[in-house]
Structure formats: structure tokens, C-alpha cells
Amino acid sequence: MSEQEATGTAGSGGFLDRYFRYGLAGSSFRTEVLAGITTYLTMAYIIFVNPAMLSTTGMDFGAAFVATCLAAAFSTAIMGIYANYPIALAPGMGLNAYFAFVVVPQFGGDWRTALGGVFFSGLLFLGLSLSPLREWLINSIPRSLKSAIAAGIGFFLAMIGLQNAGIVVANKATLVTLGAFTTPALLSAGGFIVLAGLAARKVPGAIIITVIGITVLAIVTGLQPIEGIAAMPPSLRPTFMQMDLRGAMEAGFVTIVLVFLLIDLLDTTGTLVSVAARAGIQDENGHLPRLRKALTADSIATMIGAMLGTSTTTSYIESTAGVDAGGRTGLTAVVVALLFLLSLFLAPLAHAVPIYATAPALVFIACLMARGLAEIDWDDLTDAVPAVITALAIPLTFSIASGIGLGFLSYVGCKILAGRPKEAGGAVLVIATAFALKLAFA
Image 1 (cartoon, helix red, strand yellow):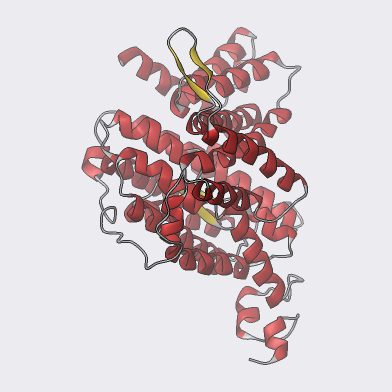
Image 2 (cartoon, helix red, strand yellow):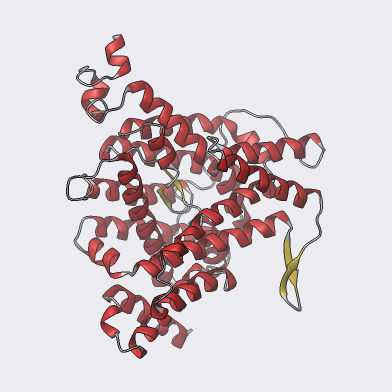
């Protein structure tokens, strides 16, 4: 490869430049690679957090680790090669918590059935991505509820993180209370402060640095054993193609699939819009080029993840870190995919990461997700009240589905009683009615 092809300057004519067109986008081969590394560092925490969370359901940790890495690698590669977007994908935070702590228990502890629900949601997402229904659904849900759902999921993650750290514990009188500040709790609390400081200084990979830092301290102090750092990947067999599609179609199927679909759709759309705006790849009308391809790639990613053995795979907002580093095309995503493949050899290190080491990451992500509350029109009580109910109900009921349902019901009720029923969009009415029927017949 010539130096001109390697740098990827505009008009170089190299194969990669001709395919991804990064020269035309004002980028270069070197910039795209560095952007991919930056994106990977900001989201690599998922290879530690996700298997730890999924293993609480009885899933094999090693297989869940491999499924996480492969799902991220394959999905991100599809997004880069097919849609040519600098967006990385991996099992989504919030969705994995919903999978592990709500859906699996609802199916009597059967994670195979829960994987079936994930697959069906991806299949439905694919159908929506190829039809006009996608735009109708997205446009029908008011911004206040979209923001509240994101914040509520963040609070849900924070609750899990605080529990994992031992900072919040159960109490018969008050439901929850402050726990004892043991060494793990102190490591988590200190790690969170360090993480926030690193993020404020815009240090790339602040989350992964914190997770590994706490793990190293735990190992050094004898709190956590370690069997090594790198090794051949564990077997994927315990989770590969283990989804139970027939079981997923039994009781609770509609609600579960709808929640998986709704969150994935909103999350993906928000990420695409944010990353595209940051990268300046919108057209003159503000529309996203190749949007259908990007949504199709995301929906296929969800099905791939279910087949491999992980919760919903979705687009990551952390991709903006790579865009800020200069990434403009799918080559950035391809670099991220390759790095996730290399991560397969870090299974021993992933297994050594204690849950209290990942707790700061969960709480920090919650802080980032909570900023969506600023987009709510607090002067309009018919928007503000349902939004607050949604954001509070998700963590307090420990169910994303219940929080969304209560929020949508209150939204419809407030609009009707305020004499503004037309403001309750079609999708909101459908979801609110479905949840009301579930409450009536539960």
C-alpha cells in the first residue's frame, strides 16, 4: 500500500478510501483508526459489565463474555460496512438490566425464553425499519416521555450499581437504606469520584480505567483472586442458539417484546441523530443519509446478539467520542469491531472484575442519562407530571415496563383532563391502552 493510500487523503484512490469515502468526508486512514480506538476505549467497559450482569441469571459467565464481544464485533462491523456510519454497537446498558432483573424472573428464571423475546423484538424492529411505521412510532411519542424514559432507565442502573457496591441495602421498614461502608463500598465510592474527575477532564477510556483500577486494587489487597489476564476465549456453546422462541410466545410476550422494541428504537434513533449531527453528515434538510441501512443494521444486531446469547445489542452514544476524534465513516466502526474481537482473549481479566468494580460505571452512566430531564417543558404540567412519574416509577417498581406503562397512562389522563386529548399521540394511546389491559387482567 502506498503512503497516499495509507493516509487516505481525498482523492487517494485507495480501496478503503473508495469504499468508505473518508477522504471525501474530510478524514484520513490514520484519523479513522485513532477514532475507532477512542470509541472502543469509551465503551470497552461493556465486556466486563455485561457478562457480570447476565451471569446473575444463571448464564455461563465465559459464554456471556464471548457473546458480548462477538455481538459487539459483528454488529459494529455491519454498521460500518453496510451503513458506513462511525457508530459502534454492543449489548445495551439498561436493556441488559431489564433482561436480567425483570424479564428472566418473569419467565421463572429461564434466560433462554428471555433470549427468545430479544430475538423477536429484533425481528419486529427489522420490520419497522423497512416500513413507514418506524417514523410514525418515533414521531408519535412526545419528547418529554422519551427524555423521561432515558432518565428512568438511568436511575434504574444507578439503583443496581449502588446495590452492587453495597452502598444501598434492603430494609424492612424503609425498603432501602444506607449500607455499611465496607472496603468494597469504599472502593466503589472512591472509584466513582475518580471516574467523574477523569470524565470531566475528557480522558479517553475513563470508565474502563476506573473499572480496571478498582479491580487491580481488589487483587492487590487480596479481596479478589485472579487466574490471569489473557487466555484463549471460553466456549460459546452454553449460550449459542439457546434462545427459546416457543417459550417466549407464552404469557407476557407482548409486553416484554414491546419494551425491548421501544427502548431499542428510541435509543438507536437518538444515537443516530446525535452522532450524525456531531459528525456533520446530515444533508441540507437535516435528514440522515442511509438511515434505513443504519436502522436495519441495528435490528439485525439485536437478532445476532440473541442467537449468540446476550441481551439487546444497540447503537452506543459513546460513538460520539470517536466522532470528536475525527471519525467520519464506517472505517471507524470496523476498527472498533476488530478491537472487540481482540478482547476475546481477555476472559480471565473479565472474570476477575468484581461487581463493585463495575458499580461506578453504572452510576456514572445514570448521571449522563439523567440530563435528558432538562429537555422537559416544566411549565406544562401535562408534560412534566407524566415525565416525573415515568422517571420515578422505573427504578421504584424495578421494572422498565411498569414505569413506561404508568408514565404513558398518566400522560393520556393528564392530556384528556386538561382538555387537550389530541396531544396524546397514536403510539402513546396504543401503549397506554395495552398497559391498562395488562393491569386489568394481571
